[in-house]
Amino acid sequence: MTNREIILKCTQVNYRYMRLPAGKVAGLEAMTELYKRIASQSLTCAQAWVQDSPCPNHEPAVDAFNWAIVAWSDAFGLSMGVDQVEWGRVFVYPHDEFANYLRPGNPPEPLPTVDGSPANIILTLDALWTELVIKLTARWGLLHHLKDKDAMIEAQSLQGELQNPDSPTYKAYLESDLNFFRHLFKHFPFSERTRKHINDWLKKAEEAL
Ligand SMILES: [Zn+2]
Figure: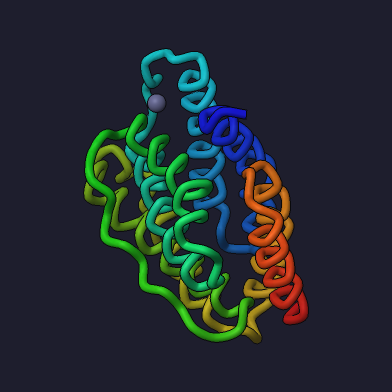
């Protein structure tokens, strides 16, 4: 598979899984609707990319979402402790290429690396990623996304929930994330060693459920 085909797979997985946890959690309806739009447009743009066509029109939040994934993936690899050179080449680089296809430019500020248990790392980075999506959406499409004000407010409140292990939202997101990651990572040609590292690490995160 080429990098473009891998990213197309990712957008398909995202389209199927991304909306599950939010759908289960009350009070995130507007955010879920926005995420569905983003996931569907990301998929359409990735299909065009595979065919080497110009990027179809998409909303600024799609750029924000995918550039934030670039920032997230850097921090996620460092926090998991995988081989950084391999992680950068196999996982970060294709995402970076796709973000540049959507909106050419410089990557946003990197997310900090996070310490703690794997579960804590996953959800803290989720919260930081969400915060970055909101920030970049406002920076690149404030007027366009005024209609999504409720979604932004919901996303902001979600950030707090994701830092609280006693919240049902925390568990719902962790479960859904783990499901999502397993489907996502299998499309990337990691070495056996890195694949084992990732699987062991995700298993540890699962113990928090
Ligand atoms: Zn596009």
